Length: 447
Image (cartoon, rainbow, N blue to C red):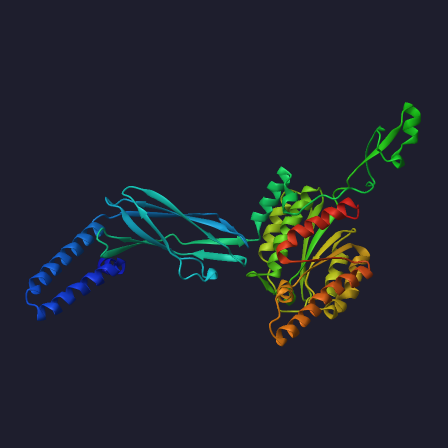
């Protein structure tokens, strides 16, 4: 009984069968008016049944005529294209036309997924497709179904391969690898990351060497010069092992979507890449996330395992529908951070009044740490400003959009007035702009 049910579920009829059957019916109808066509109709039905039987036998006699294996990474990168491949082998003795449907995770909401191809007898082919997740979490893949049509195209057989698997979607480690590779090949300038010219020197002494033309005369070591009889200068190296924290706001203001992802996801992807850059520069990277009165802190470290800890910590973050408490954040950072650190605060202010409410707490943070406030430019408002106004209503909309865009610039000026650094950027340029700002601060010896 189970075998009969399995057979019934795997059997499908192609459009060609219905067309042939319809043609036979039309012949019988025509034979009512033209009796000579009756024999033609009977022969057509017999031929149709014979071809149908042959299609059945060719498709169902081999037991394992088709094999399918799914290949993909153990984890996906959020916001990036992730490759999935299906390797299909045709063990039939004839060239088969196949259609593949893969049960994708419900998060993608893709109901029309189809892959089509032709496989010769004994041929093995790999079909590849890309998936772009826009939220972190667990994604469950289901079965793979392969539909094979017979030689005559009347019958279709479905092969189902049960290989369910759950894949975790992590913050964008693909961007992390890209930045590492570009850094290794010195191609970071191709995506906008560039080094700033170092002005002055740090106070971390390295060694004494002979003076060469072009050295800063302020670094002359007169005692060593007197001993050696030649001009000697102190050589300094860039300061290292400083604490750098990515502070991520998980409040409702970070729930705003952009290109399918929330601002929080963009901040998380940027924080992961930035922490890797900081670790490569010899600094200690840490993480702080806050929402409401809750603040979670991962202490800064320069150990090799720190990047893995950051990745796992960032994987579990999610936005909340509450207002973030900056006062509570300041208290937690004061008690947890024992030394002056660079704080990269990822947040979002849509109006100057929203920033004014948090300004006293931001000033308090900037008093004890080097604070960089990173918030987002509303690209939709920019599109409205650039669009040509066709009606009076469009003019009103553009005026309102310009007002909001102007408030963003006011926020930057107000923060600078109180000695707080800020960075206004678009979500797509976030990572590059933050890394550039960090390198600039390092070159100015502020971090």
